[in-house]
Length: 360
Image 1 (spheres, one colour):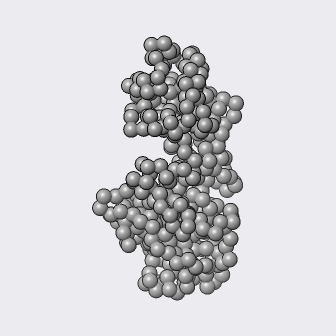
Image 2: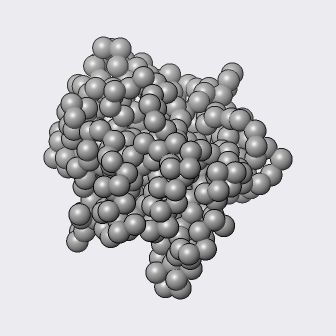
């Protein structure tokens, strides 16, 4: 086993999106994660291979049965951490809550929910779109006429999984120093609100208008948006700094002296129309080839299928193919303890085998 978290053992209670992504991230970094699934579990989306399940073995246990409950308790009693994504109180009703393991005082108990363990909405259902709506994040994304969900990246994975993973690692460090575990209450609504820190600061400083399609980073600025090219594809332009904007104009063949000022908001629509007309004269890949490895901050907008083949991603081995599925390699990268995708059995393991491996 390699990775900075090698030697840590984590029990994962099978759940949806943000919970397995957090477990996958810990496993990519070297933690030994065992996933507990319901017998005969079927994937919600009907996938035969889910990238989020990679790098860890699994056992099938009915946690409501005496036998399954007993095995789960024995595993958790030997674990450094546990990850679960049930509604508040569900694990307690199963007798597997944070207070049910006094013999394992170092246990880090990670809880992944949309609304958190407390609060008026704590027991209500929801999904990514609901959580980021309440944090103010969704309101800021999309064209002026309607907010647009940013896939489920901002809530489930950005505001949820990554905060749970960071919280678990911080709690592991605390447990190593003090011998004391603790509960990590990772709420997607909290995390997505935390991700809005810079935008909140800009709004407080009068640099952000609380209206979509009006700001530097929401697509309104002609120097920070996307443009359609002759081929129908798009390029992304992020030339915010004056020197980068000047470099873009030079390479695009546009006369800066004949254009509206970059920061004249009243003339942004006019400036955007001029840039759009110019970029529409050539294909996406022609523009990308001319501006690659420059400070123009222009890149092609690649499709999911195209991204793995881009030469930068190839050079860094950003993607790999495993079990016939192209997927991102572990990230971030570590100079001394590189992460990797651990080998895992294709079928559920015998619980007694796992118990034996864990000395339970």
